[in-house]
Image (cartoon, rainbow over all chains, first blue to last red; front, side, top):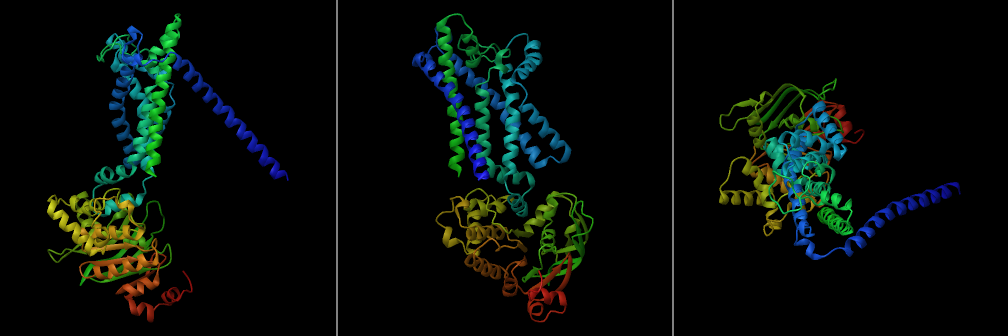
Length: 268
Length: 260
């Protein structure tokens, strides 16, 4: 009897916790949806912020995150491959631990770091600085995904490649990475989703701009930073625009995340 | 004629105090099937994995003694334990292929699986690749089942087909020796007998060493049998001698099922 009772209590407690946790998420999403949708209009996608649109910000955000991916994905993947396939003992573990610590580094600290090493010497904020800050956030995530996905590839597959006379790097390139491809791709997509909504690393690196721009050497339009600016604006219309922007940003992140989940599910 | 000759060979894993193989002397006859039997942990897989130096994937092993491999062009024997250069390892493994317990198809098409070793060894000509792949698949009794879906993923094949694909892949590079590490222990009886037939057929072109837990399998297909126990080679002889009148008491106990 006692066991059954304890079982019931634990079940009830965990159900309540799940409901509390999820209801906050639902609350956030519903608020975003209602407030965002009331100020949402498709014209937001065709005009720039200077004309009360979001076009330049959305494009800018993707360029910032895209450029960060160009730096972060190859570096992270190669580092992940090194740790799992080549690194031995202490050094590999050191890099793995450092990378894990980096992953939990506060994003504002990364922003401050890039501010100190790029913005201060060059004298002004720039899209490059923003992308580099995002790349620094992205690298440890990609390292950790690559590392753990490669660890799932059975060692027999590596041995089979070696036994055919392939050299180690060929086995890694031709066989191991192919076997882990879907997992690594999903991880990269989730890493992208993670950085595409970031504000703190961009706040004093890329800042934002009211105008459309492709010039990465100067302040660069960013959706998340503009949300921060608009939300603290005195005008109601600006705050409404911030809600619409938040809604769009959340939808973007959600779609990328769901795509990642979809890819993994289709693999099985 | 011997294709390989193992002489006074000892092997120690990194960090281990005692050697896993002690002073093994074992001849591998050309175009014959030699099976290695013995209870788990007796060192038969360790010995097999020394014959293509795949142990070297994990550094820190200690080898002692000699493992000679016949050089078909010169007719002389080279000690494979002397190999140090990456290039020589690659050549060794193209001469001495290996099939594993679990089928290990690569995550690519059936054609690409079989062509992989050929491409590695530098064959680029499309027609030659096609011919060699077809020849290997026919030689592995898989052609009929897969000829119309060569471009499909190899992961879609059944376990037995995957294992025959792995054999085709190994045969395609025309090795002199093939090492089988319990090739049928993950397969059902029908797939097992298909693989056994295949191994017997391969003997015409390739010398074979096979590790097996299945004594019926050893007696069915092999010409020579070596019984190993706790890192020692207890007895080596023609298969019928080992199974009908073994000289050593331990061999008799094992094959009659009194221990192991």
